[in-house]
Length: 177
Image (tube, rainbow, N blue to C red):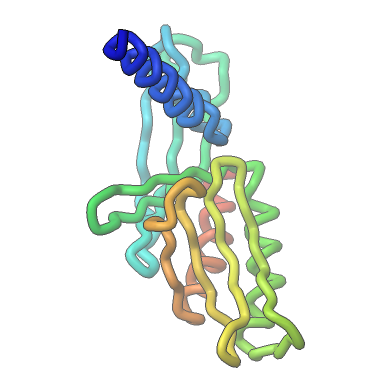
């Protein structure tokens, strides 16, 4: 009886864990590339490495349905101590991310001083986050590749913030074509 009860508890816990994993937010490019029953070509075009974050343009093409236009986006990859973290920004999210960085960069560079603890944060569909927070008298830029793990938190230098902005502006031109 105890074994049966323990087995039921184990099954319940595992179903809850798997349900949470499936409910993680996904980008449109992730949804497309995880679609079953078709053949995809995934092309990775390197952009730049910024603060240990590899940026690539990802183009996913459905080879069995050529009438569907290829999906493009930016792939962010960070190799943590024990795990690799990957996030995607869809092409339709690039404008908002670039605009967010345009807003944040002057504040960070010029050290605009808030009166209280302050955070500026952009978050994508897939959970990729970039932002800055004001602490100990200065702004601290950061990126967090995935929302479900604090180990994907990457502190950025102020200059890296600008590099990310310039790289994404360049990538936008490539993704839109």
